[in-house]
Image (tube, rainbow, N blue to C red; front, side, top):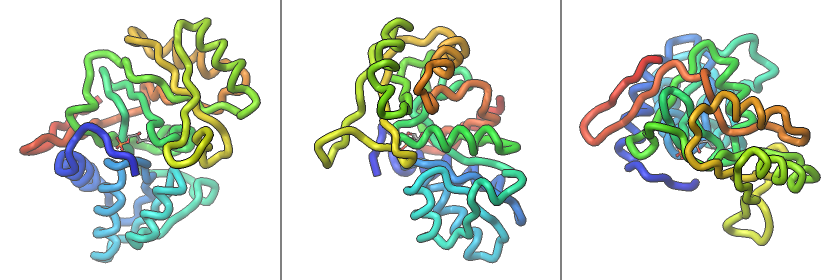
Length: 228
Ligand SMILES: O=C[C@H](O)[C@H](O)[C@H](O)COP(=O)(O)O
């Protein structure tokens, strides 16, 4: 699993604080990434202690980890509701997120948006005044060049994400490709999100605006809780 700026202790503190919101009988969206992984492990501990929880995974990786941790799983099309989702972020600014560093943002957005409450787990390295992290955009493979050109028209610079341990591109769990799109500082994420969503061939982008309910920021000596 890729690692990011914060320490494991910071990530674990944020994740364990968010998992305190999990109650008996809940259906919980299981995010993807190194911070969400600590939440999945903590939910596994609750299950081991006898709590009745079902998890809806957002990726192959979160499914595998949840299985290893003993968390009973349900597919998205098997549940009528998700009580809460716990997921990480690549950057957080003013309650808006950039996600998709692990190329899982398409399924994450479905699960996080469907959940009654969406709890973000982060560390101080993720917190910013304005979003500036390149925006991952999942595209149908045949649309990679047309979407890249449209991103350029929107003022961005699209780069095909390449795999680290194979020659060729990253292929998402959905069989698609990812363009990492650098727009510099994003003054207002809403209009950019709408523009990206409207491009033919775009499956999903990593701007999550207006979705998060609480941000848990794990620090070296505690957790900052930001209610939105
Ligand atoms: O696709 C991956 C997800 O959006 C992750 O939640 C995001 O990249 C943050 O991951 P991490 O907690 O490893 O920094």
